[in-house]
Length: 357
Image 1: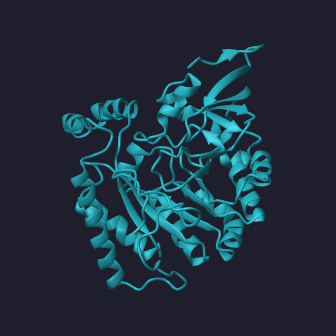
Image 2: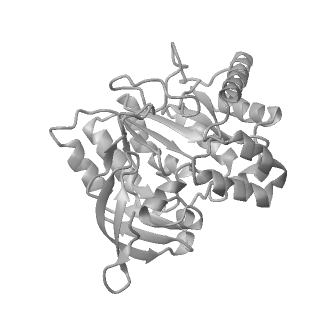
Image 3: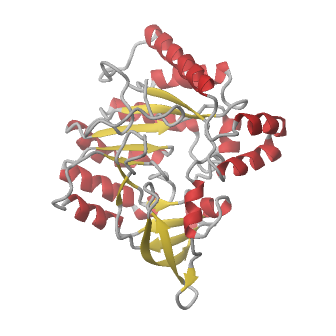
């Protein structure tokens, strides 16, 4: 794919991008470069006007949602394992520091969402946010695009889900409570473990995981269903029994109606990036991971064993403790995140599953 080429003055770039989730090329037009200031210092913010923001997930995908919205591309949370890093290659950028520091901002995301929801061809299917970049990463505090998109969804009565690692989601509690009263929203925070050393080394741009767990409790106390995604679980780093028990116990105490683990998976490109990080931070794990991740996903038996371990922990801690008032555990089979409504989709493959227990 062609790299961005200057279009005049050195300040404008013309990007040919792929849709965030569908992977189809889409010309987004001219991008204006803006240096980050204040809390965003060190970032380069690339303003683009998107032709389309509500993107369809390919029919061949086994993910449990059909439609997504991502107001941003790239993410300054800088998680070393992030599966979305290769999407920056569609921009002619790198999957390392470029992904962490050069953030594409779809400045017209809110107006596009409103227009697309109003289209006669739109049938009100659930929309997932947080599937390819965190909708509440730090630049959201400046741009407010995620809040605008949520407001549009609530006004349209359109169901949606939000997945984030950020405490900034509580800024929008008013909208989320309105959506929850109408039965429109699922939310979840991704909290792989509570160990501060693991957090600082693997997710350096994210809020403290204990603060995230406090937000889980606050949302649930306010009547906004908020689960915990124990993700990703990092082999040899965050998969120890004490670490898993600590995060599951905290999630139960926070009233999370759904708790789900996802084992680390390493897609092409991300694998090399993560192995490079291991070489610098945990060289003792490099050979093991090179063998374990010859393919993107860990062996199916390991994934099933992890799910069984977490399920047992959830059941034990729920039996031992009192679930906070107002939190009702879903009846029947576990619900897949982002798939509350709309036509059924096939069960995702092992390793892709976004299922809450």
